[in-house]
Each structure stands twice: as C-alpha cells, then as structure tokens.
Image (tube, rainbow, N blue to C red):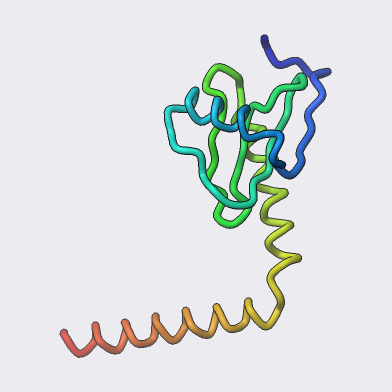
Length: 112
C-alpha cells in the first residue's frame, strides 16, 4: 500500500485492544516495543507508528513512509506533556538543571 494525500490518518492513545498490532509493529521495526502510555498513528485503518508519550521513543512500520507520522505523534506527545506537567514542576526541573550545570562549571574551572 502506498500513502496518498487522501489516506485518512488518525492519531490517538493506544489501548489494550492494540497490543497485538503494537507487538507486530515492533517486530517489523526490529526493536523492542516501548512500554508506558503510547500514542498510535493509523493510516488506512492500520497502526503504522507508535510513540511513548513520556520520552518520544517510537516504533514505525519500515515498509510504510512513516517519518511524517512519527513527527505528528511527537508533536501531539509534546502537547500532552506540556498540559500534564505543571508550571512548578517545569521550574523545579530548570532550577535543578541550572544548579547541576553551575556545579559542573565550578568543578571544571578548578581543574584548569
């Protein structure tokens, strides 16, 4: 099957009924299926790509032009992460990262 401009694409959360199709997709891709909360992209009624919302790990059908599907899944996953992560959590993460970078910089300058 080839992708055409009129192929219907559906982006949705994976559910228990998708388990068999997701395992098949991982086998086609030659990788392990990422666990956790997943999004799937259906094209022509078949799951062609799946992406873990948490960190954008994905599997895709290597026999289908799925690069654009993975991009759409990633965009949707980022939107979900933005809405589920509170502003306070994001600030805490940034402060923690800045502190670690500052610590690393101070240790590096001592070694010079």
